[in-house]
Length: 110
Picture 1 (cartoon, rainbow, N blue to C red):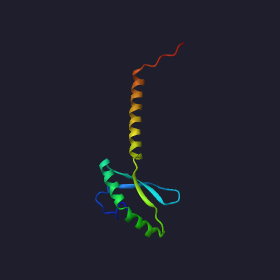
Picture 2: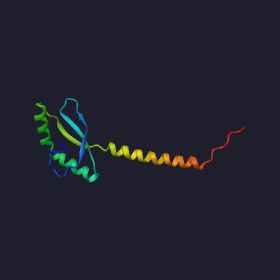
Picture 3: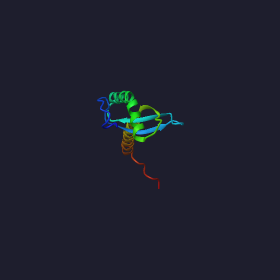
Picture 4: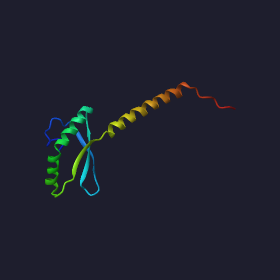
């Protein structure tokens, strides 16, 4: 639905990463990863929230179920955070290796 059926220009390329269904099944939180900057994330979130009724109707029709949970959308930033953490760890390793090269190893005592 995100790629072709929702024709809202505010929806940027995105992927549903997780759906968390509340106990009892009355509500569900849909986590979406948006490929873009923070402004694109906000725009996509607003458009998905506005299209919530259409999305629920489509789920009801496609799955043939009577009750569809209330949907709420949230931006999943875990991929971006993981990338940032990898970058910082790489910098730290680079500094450690430079520091190890700069400090001469002491010779073992006889």
